[in-house]
Length: 87
Image 1 (spheres, rainbow, N blue to C red):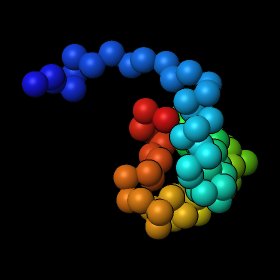
Image 2: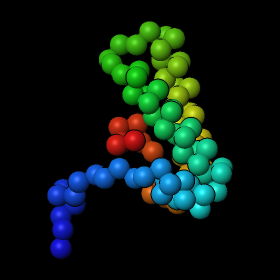
Image 3: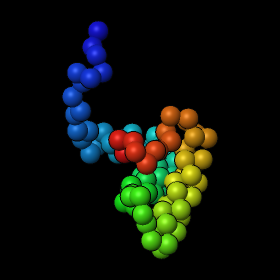
Image 4: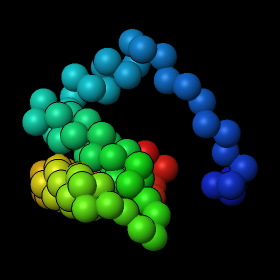
């Protein structure tokens, strides 16, 4: 029995990643990419005081993340991306 905190992340070879990607529908791959980009944008706009433009950009990124997560969660509930998550 192995504990999850003892597991070491191992890089996936490109051929294996391409094989895995070929099994996933294209709209799910696109939603995963969009969610990842939106989560990065949300993390970029952190802080207690944001100017009005930054608040608007953060809200836009949150809406894009929610839209992409809706597609991902419809495919599988554990695919949803969180702004503070490991993605």
